[in-house]
Length: 475
Ligand code: SIN
Image (cartoon, rainbow, N blue to C red):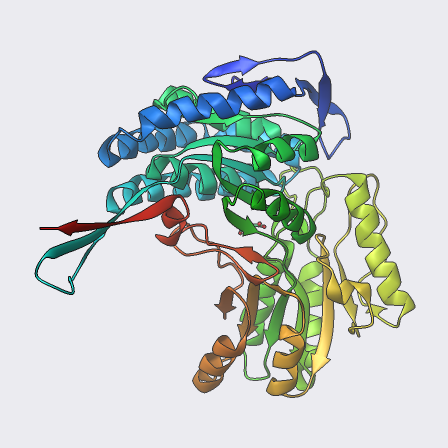
């Protein structure tokens, strides 16, 4: 198998094994890929302590040195692109062409923060009298801990670890137990690139609450970053309160995707295919509620149904696969329960009722979705298009905003006044206008309301790992 396949936690630049093991399964075959060791509490504390030792060294390094190390990490990731993508398809299930795209996307965060490392500027503040000089500058926050999800096994890691390292912080990462193999490969490559021992530790465990509790309650860990569900995020925030940690939280969404009657319908449907079916619908920014103005409803449904009928579901290694398996059988069960609830309450399934084996879920379109249905309120995390008709702009804005979430929103319109009006009125952290794929390492990714705190990517993503220090000098 791959030269980047490992099965133990990575602590202080070495693999750390225990007697307790768990299996990492291929979601396409449900077969075990490899048994990996489950880190014990001693290992978790060891990782925190070695990260602290590494931080003492790291904070004495300069930005140019850290930038060079990050560039070497970027080069190694890109040199191993095919191997990493295959590892990802194996443990996560996504089509290989998407996995290759994710390696590019994930590596781009490393390159961007290699560049940004050199740009953590401070301020000279005009003093209020002649006897003082006031400045402020930025320093690394310290040891960072993070938990990352299974849907983007590389990009969600690099978009946290790269800015943290660029800022001069060390990192203890607990990746999802479903996709720890890409995280381990990344840590190994970071070590080869010249990361200080202990600067990037990876802890493998099936018991995320146990590991998360130690990380969030540690006095040594000064910052905690999480990507995952709003429910788990709230629990972690509560735990972080005990030590008043800095936090960034990238949590759940319920993205509206609005098509106005003046939109270019072909472009809108193409954009919707990307926003809905990327990673089989398993993204926090996936279009979840598709609002279509009533006068164009039939045309949109017709165009969409034709495109959806061409999608091929299968093993991610299949040459023509567009949609891989869902991550595990329970995920498929949840999707099917949401669909059954919607149909029982009056939704109409437009596409054929195709039942597939194991965790494979055929894409489907529902029309007549309304707020009485669970599917309207929950992230589907699967290949289901839920369509809701609307009449007026004010009506659709009220519906779009009437949820506790505020991560991504999308709309299609060719009316410039409407474009400004709607983008300003949507209570979301990110808005795609005439575009269904908005994620980009150079732009700030994050949500409002219960979708989270803080931003990842952009110059803002570096500030999440920096403290501002104000210095007042009396002359
Ligand atoms: C996510 O689903 O959490 C991230 C998706 C992205 O980066 O586009």
